Length: 607
Ligand SMILES: C[S@@+](CC[C@H](N)C(=O)[O-])C[C@H]1O[C@@H](n2cnc3c(N)ncnc32)[C@H](O)[C@@H]1O
Image (cartoon, rainbow, N blue to C red; front, side):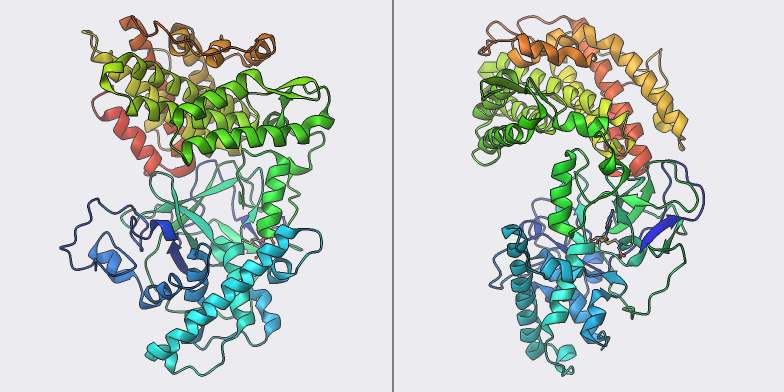
């Protein structure tokens, strides 16, 4: 099955109304911090005086409304959290909710052959469960599914004793059905983000969402609506067709009726113009991974080889080439081994920060790897700045320097400043490098928008912080050269407009960057190599650089108030541009766009 557009669709249009989930569950680690119904973070500290949060209960709620819309079937799925299953149990809880609904409605598929689809959704069970002689990982995955299914069946059978609903049902537990349901969840459920982008749980939707196939160059994306958010779209602009012919489809399988309410609603939205009858696709994988990494991910989770236009392109698409590019390799045969060595090296550095909180060691290791590369078979190999590992490294460096700035003692205020500068510089570098990829692969809009907003926020905070040392005010930021502010407030965008906005934005920041870049990066040996971040050929200079240690003595002694003003202007441009992109892919009321609006209008920015 697949979904196609019923009419011509412009970029940035909602293709579905807000669709309610069939079943949903928070991941184990978010059960105590997030509302079990709407998945929003709970206010901290939790108010124990309300009557909808019981201290001993597994689930917590942000409001009486969320508490009342969490159905008894969802509540009873907590039986799994104490099971002997060793892995993450959110998938199991969602499968258990489906099983309980099927049992409650006596809506059993008539024979096990029906388990290839249940309630219209593909289970993919043959592929996911069949042990493969070729891969140990595949076998482990199949075993994990079987163990998970046993845990679900055990929970369901223990509940029959306690639950009057299930006590009336006398069929034996059907392990095949349970396995098929778990496979269905793994094949169709999607990760749900909270408003600040953390992956907090999963939700399963019916065929109107779940029949949308994957592409590595998709023309649509999805977002989640919080309970208070109204629907902007009444009817669906997509319709199902069977994958082997373009006939409209109905399925003969049963439907579950009277589904429990609550859970995050999902909306599908176009990120490219789509023709009438064209297939609508979303991404199941991280689009900033190179082709081979995406292929492994899609195979291990879904067991298909992606044949989308981006994947079948020979030679590799420009974006995929950049994402795996290494420098000075002496030939493509070295690519895989080199990528593996770099992956280990970057992973070890990132782990220092994420697992051991050692941000300093992480920064030193990452910058050393980026600057000096690795020695491989007598070649010095360096990562291309748009290699996906470099992009990971920049993301981590931006965060690790911010962490170092926040944790430093006040008497070392100069260090605090330069850590903040480096953090902002890495955020900017990440945004501009991925922006160049976005110009040839527009489905990267979601990542790029996030990166520009991150860079804008970081630069604005920096300008505001430096302000305390200066007597002059930050200026009125309405740029005389561009219309980004008006465009940010505009309601609709078309494809040509998006291209024009990009040009306008790049023109403006190309003027500002030379006035601030040296200030942002001086004292950092890796960033110091980047003479002009707008000109991507800077990385060629890396090859001429020897081994060096970072020397930041005497830094941030005196900055001119003009630099602070320029940093502020740069931050506003990045924020506005990121906000325009987030309006396009997420709508004006998305958490990202609202965040941009609140940063712009909270008084720092005078429009
Ligand atoms: C969420 S379902 C999508 C709808 C599905 N095609 C159906 O008929 O129900 C996910 C499954 O669809 C198939 N699928 C999705 N995108 C695909 C693609 N680009 N190429 C091949 N199979 C794909 C895979 O079997 C995957 O496990």
